[in-house]
Length: 404
Ligand code: CTP
Image 1 (cartoon, rainbow, N blue to C red):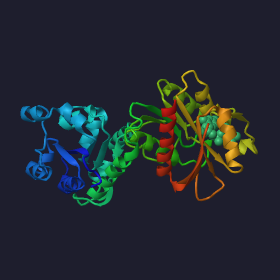
Image 2 (cartoon, rainbow, N blue to C red):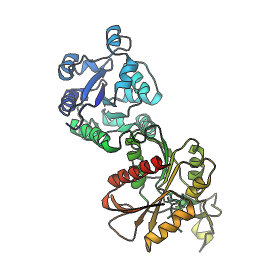
Image 3 (cartoon, rainbow, N blue to C red):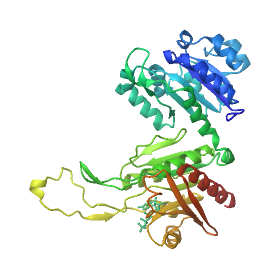
Image 4 (cartoon, helix red, strand yellow):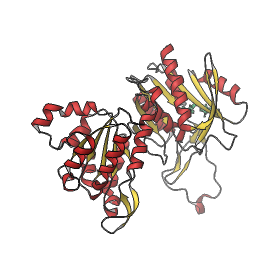
């Protein structure tokens, strides 16, 4: 009963994959969730309201202006009731309407009116999925924190083969379980705004080349997911990564350290916690060239480097200093001593240090081990997934906020 008592609003839009939704509904109910189903106009062509009513024990809803349904639970009430809104299948049309922010039926209205995280399980023909219009909509939704589940690749109802099949109900349930798994911290950061930097930065040499580092962004993204799961409003200022934005997190994409600095300053007002996880390049080419450096005419070259701004230090020293400022340090030798010094030098409340000379943790791996150093405490956490480490760090942050 991993979803016991959770209120799930399941939106169903009109695609052939809707035939899978009764299985999804059954598994949600078996996991203890309370489910309200909302159909788009064409969804009823693929799945019958009678089936859904039998499985959920509640009549499915469809129209925005249904007097009887509104009398039982108004649509705004339904939007507030939801712990999660999942749309499965999400057709290209519904994805387009969500990306445009339309509210032309009950489902899209709920998507705008609910504070709950939104997940989509897209399903469509592979050519449609690949279309730039759909991909742009997906990118826009992801950037707004919408969780995109799948689609899977394989044989399609239309005979095509490729990505576009709706993910299996088990996969969708897995996502929801992960979202609701972080129980102990649930609500601990509600009403707090947290700004996190993550990933590497790229410092241009010329229009086609840059200097960067091996940071994957995984630890920063895990921090964002954990802070969001604890109820915070999370802004993730991210250098280039291959990662998906955690559900419910607002992501701001940047490239260089200078951009990251600007984006951070723009977000600082009313921020309770700043977490610098980004591997910010310490130096950048002093004069990036406007044109590609040509081998023939240049011969050997040397690039003059200039120092980048220290983002976290400027946050810690700013007039709008967040209550808690947390830094990360990757060290190769004398890790603890370096980290203690770094925490004081940068004016941080907490520093999370790991030893990157170990190949099994840190950069580009899924696991990490770390020591958390604050004013009055040093706690060493053993090797564990970056997700679970993120949970432990959020716990430490909750404690620091409590003390302040
Ligand atoms: N950091 C930052 N801006 C920089 C460099 C680092 O915000 N220009 C932040 C990182 O996000 C991290 C912390 O500072 O939270 C420590 O990063 P690190 O690279 O270890 O610090 P440096 O000051 O660069 O120290 P070192 O001399 O060890 O390179």
